[in-house]
Length: 78
Image (cartoon, rainbow, N blue to C red; front, side):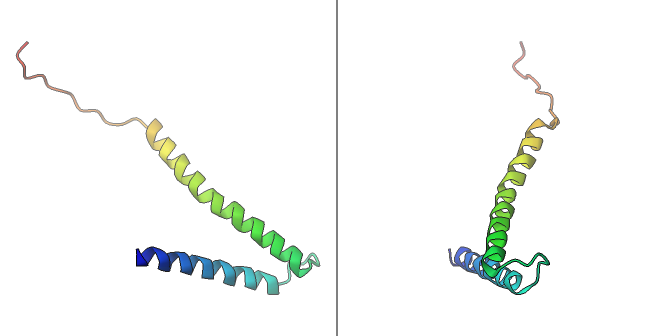
């Protein structure tokens, strides 16, 4: 349980640091700080939503892929 909390806090910390770094960089379009925050915020939302989508897509591909089937041997003597 403590490990999950640590990972969550680490992820939030990394997100805040990355957003802070983007606030100080120049995006070349003359963005105001609030516009930079808006762009970074929606970029993070889209990025985080891609993770479950990719995992679901991989699961779907695994379900479609042909699986090796073993022969069932009937030992009942019929």
